[in-house]
Length: 290
Ligand SMILES: NC(=O)c1ccc[n+]([C@@H]2O[C@H](COP(=O)([O-])OP(=O)(O)OC[C@H]3O[C@@H](n4cnc5c(N)ncnc54)[C@H](OP(=O)(O)O)[C@@H]3O)[C@@H](O)[C@H]2O)c1
Picture (cartoon, rainbow, N blue to C red):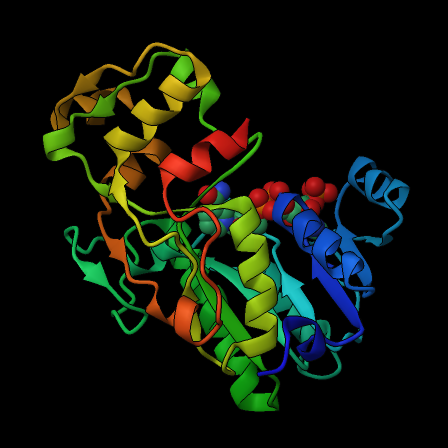
């Protein structure tokens, strides 16, 4: 079998080069690849330039730049409002040709609630939240563009990302409650480093138009996650309350995650993308966040 390095082109563009983008860029540059990053803000652009990256500072909501790259990683989120992703749609419309290969980070929120069942990537897409509907719109835009103009896109359906600097410290410090274990929804997670590595594997081995779960394969409850994070950070464990009480006390955005329970199967990640997470569960992943 060819190696990862042999399957990746010499140039890549990262649209939305934040935390995950920078992790991907570091890996690509270690393989001698030329990386261009698109970010919106001047401080972000300057910080990336200081690291030696080529940077285009552009607001994708205003004038998305036309670019030619053999490989594009699309990591910019949709806007915070609405049911669609005009940011991605506008960018696709501004490209003279379909991207030769594009890896898109979506979310597992596109499935909506699955009552805690184990699901694979063929599960019907029935988003409950506007957040999930925007991602479904982005996936649809990519599929429509590929049908019209060709091109190759791969979708990564990603659950909660955790990693260094990405633990729920503030929420725990505020003493916000979690739903008690018996009623707590299932959640899935992926360590940020595993997501970055999996994105490269998707670029190398992803089937055109296919979707892949990028999760560690060991879902636990929300209650378990927050309790473990508190322990790791040396903070008091979050108070455990009933589902009903949590609804009163959490913000609507936080609550929207409580209404969705599912367990993500990861066979396709492992078999088709040839990627096995380095951090297969919280026991091993959380200590690597400090
Ligand atoms: N948090 C989670 O658990 C989770 C779960 C599933 C999927 N995701 C998604 O995973 C993707 C990667 O996450 P991440 O942590 O790397 O995100 P991040 O650190 O917030 O980075 C987002 C990047 O997008 C850029 N961006 C945003 N709006 C833009 C605009 N209008 N024009 C140009 N650039 C724009 C930002 O540039 P500036 O910094 O200059 O604004 C930044 O470089 C995101 O789409 C995220 O929503 C996250």
